[in-house]
Image (cartoon, rainbow, N blue to C red; front, side, top):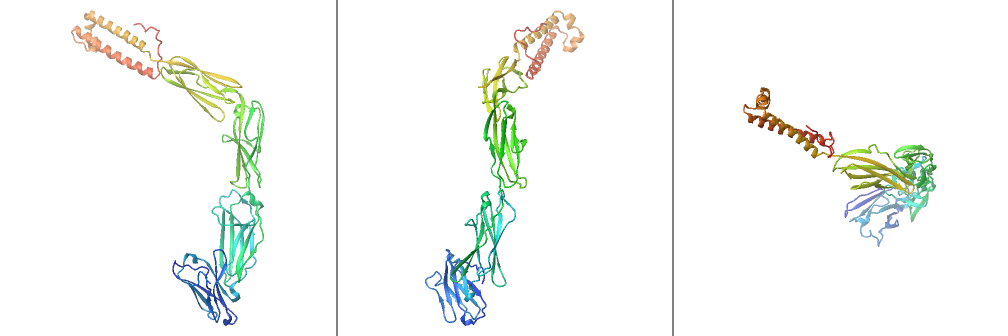
Amino acid sequence: MEDRVEVFLRDTAQITCMFTVSDNPDDVIIQWYMITKTNVRLRIYYGDSTIQVVDRGGQFTDKISVIGNGKSSEVVLTIRDVALEDELEFICQVNGLSAESPDRPIIEGVHSGISVSNKNPSKIGSCEAKNGYPRPNITWYRDQISLQNTPGVVSVVTLVTKESSGLYTVQSDLHLNVVKEDKDSFFYCEVSYLVPGGTKMTETNKINITVHYLDLAILIPKDTHVMAQGEELMATCNALSSLPTHTEWFKKGEKVAEGHTLTLKDAVFDMAGTYVCVVKVPSLKGLETSGSLHVLVQGPPEIKESADTVLEESTEKSLKLSCHVRGYPTPVITWSSSDQSQVDRQTEDEVLSVVSVKVTSDITAYCNASNNHGTDSISFSIKASKFCLNTCANRRVSLSLCLFSMVQTTSSAPSTTGNDPWFRLFFFVPPEGSGVIIAVIIICILLLAILGSVLYFLHMKGKIPCVNGDKKPPSD
């Protein structure tokens, strides 16, 4: 008999049952059964050498016919107008050959341990039922609870083999995503098979598996611990495991200790922060857990010294000052300068305060930090530099006076300077006296413009300081 018959909806299906009998063929009794959705066995046909009857009142009463008898050693069940609800299991029973109890099923568990960190279901064991007819069914159980295929959690793989004798051998492998509790569980399989008049079942022995696990890390003290400056802390980190473990402590990604115990002596602010303990099982990659401990060190504020406390900036520009402060309780930071915009940002072990100061004159800004253990402060000296327009203007006036004096000298003594051939060649002066005055004025204006541009450029680049307004311009 075929194990599976496929047919299109509304078509006709034919199921062939072949058999061999050693007794008188006239004594052969042929019966067809169906297995309902609720696993109930119902007869739908009976036939012998004298009578062939389709059972009345069933879903196949008007849809089936059977061709063949005991003499032909073959019968064919025909189902017409196949519907979706006809997708069932059918059994051909020929005298006592209808059912053959399988051998006692055998179960074998895996011998190696199974890690709870495995991402995919791991093989738990294998169950085999040999020489059964019709095909036996195998169901897996964990502590008397049946296990069904569940994506990513439970996977049951079944292999069916039809032997040359016509009997079936069924092998079933159970794959499971194990958890720690499975170390105390018992697994077994149940083999069910049909016999005339009902269904029989038999169970295998129970097996236990070895589960490799690692519990969550437990820290003492846990979460957050506050200690005073100079105190000592001894913290422990442990995780229950089925295998030997190795523990390491980290702070800001750097390893600071090995072993289950972390010791901090003579506490200082540098010891404050978050410590992470990582517990691993060296023999099993990926089996690890971790926990964290946040350490706070009590003490008065401590401001980190800044490399630049003496600064220079142009007037009317803004300058950013920063202040790094450590201490616990968290210090309150204030700035003494006016016209400021302050932003405070708290990190794991310090407070960073940034203030923007508009420079209008020489000032000294103070960063003040305080908590209930004390205070600390740091000063920033800011020198204002500016481009003094008055001084530059005085320089231009002095140059103008000098040039105007040259013009007067040139005008009053045309016979001496104006007639000098080198002077006339350099300034392109014509023989007439009026030309000398015009040339000198043009050249002085050009020189004055160039000098002013150079001075302004150098000042903007910070190459020359600005002279205070109360100083007198240089005399000619």
